[in-house]
Each structure stands twice: as C-alpha cells, then as structure tokens.
Length: 137
Image 1 (cartoon, one colour):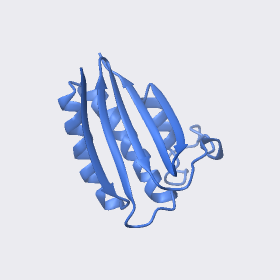
Image 2 (cartoon, one colour):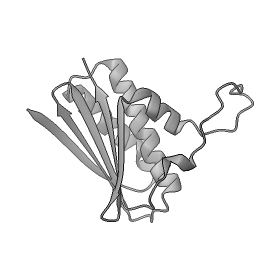
Image 3 (cartoon, helix red, strand yellow):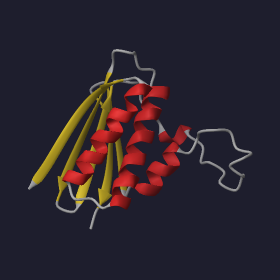
Image 4 (cartoon, rainbow, N blue to C red):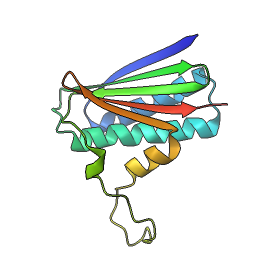
C-alpha cells in the first residue's frame, strides 16, 4: 500500500518552517524513526532552500512537495519551475577546513547526498523534478 502526503508552498524562505512541520508529520505518519526523520527533514529543507535561493524563481512561483511511502522506502518528490539545475556545477565542500574558517553555506548538497539513500533528478515539462529516497527499517 502506498501512503502519500502533499504540500505546495510559495518560493519564500519564510515558508521553510511550514515545510519542516509537514515533513516531520509525514515521517511520523509513515513510521520513520527519529534519526531517519531528522535526516529526511534536513535534506528536504536544504533542497528547498537551495531551490528558493538559486533557482531564479518568482515570488509567486510554487514548489510542490509530495511524500510517498512504498514498503520500506520513503520518496520525497520536489517539483519547481526554476531554471534547470546541473549538480556538476557545484563544487564538493572541503571538509578539512575548520568550520570557523569556512564561509557560511555550501553544505546543503553534501548533506542531501549523505543522508538520502538515492537521489534522482530530471528536468521535464519546464520543471525540475528532484526525488529523494530514504530506506527505512
């Protein structure tokens, strides 16, 4: 049986707390443990913050987030009408540099890759479609 939840938010950073609550509630509904919930929540918040900051979206543009549980997998599908994203354009962070000497930011994609088990990206029909997959126990 597939369980599904959905949310649509405007492309504003002040909507992130609404997103965080939605993801947390969805993970609870799907039976995810605290650590899995934390990982998914952080990854999704980082992905959506990056979309808002770097996607050249208009204030009235909408970001769609769907959460689906399929057996032991949770799929988070994020769609936005921003410019196409090329992950190869993003440099890997140098984790050897002290956090005190590093410029703020730049770790979002690192955390997404670290905490999610699988990541799929497509640009189709004028939309970015990012699917984050987490395997749960």
